[in-house]
Amino acid sequence: MEQKIKSWDTCNPVDVAGAKFAYIFSPTGLGLVIKVECDVCKRILYLTEEFLI
Image (cartoon, rainbow, N blue to C red):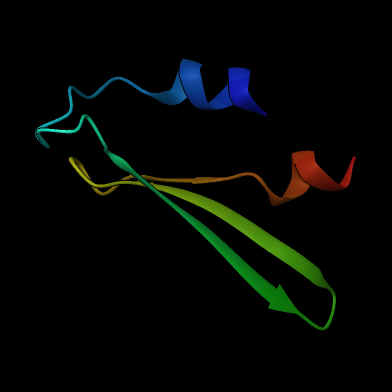
């Protein structure tokens, strides 16, 4: 999962601390939805499918 995030990441952080991702965990009746959102460009990476494998 960490390797998939690193290959998806192309933005440079604009925050002083270097933070640029929001990790979103949404529980549903069917399981857990996992998303990573880039705070710089607002792209979303869905990791739910890989997490369930």
